[in-house]
Image (cartoon, rainbow, N blue to C red; front, side, top):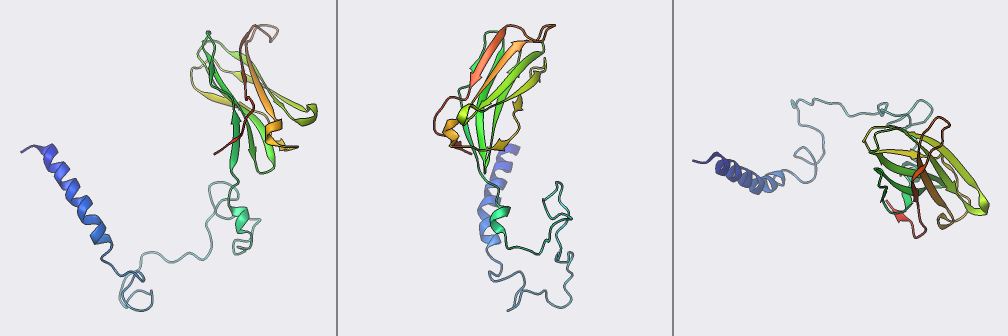
Length: 197
């Protein structure tokens, strides 16, 4: 007999029998009876946790400076959504690919450019966030010679105005002895309605 057919048949039978088997237990709790405590003599492997464990990052899973029993600020536990206003993905004839975005999350706004450098040499890049009232914020990025995708972003700053009033531009150039070379690619965030992620 063909082993593939046996495997497929076994998987189909398992998939067909799993839902009825999962729903065959009591629906009101883990243990039969009116309360949800285990019957006498049952071995329970884990004790219920009364205090949260320390998480991998500060502020996740409890921290030293917070009271874990205070659940009054449930809205603060929900992460705000990030809105992105991105331009098109562009590619230069020299092998630089980039897409530039203006991002907003909560009350913060910043610019980010995603890029890939296939030129084989190190490049310099300037990322500029332009906001309402002529405000600008520039970040210089060193773009490595590797062919792997990467990103560069400006620091976050408090939003001043509508998201549509912000734009960003990233310029990629070859790095010569002076630090400036010919422009290879200019990527912008374009205007338009932000996309919520």
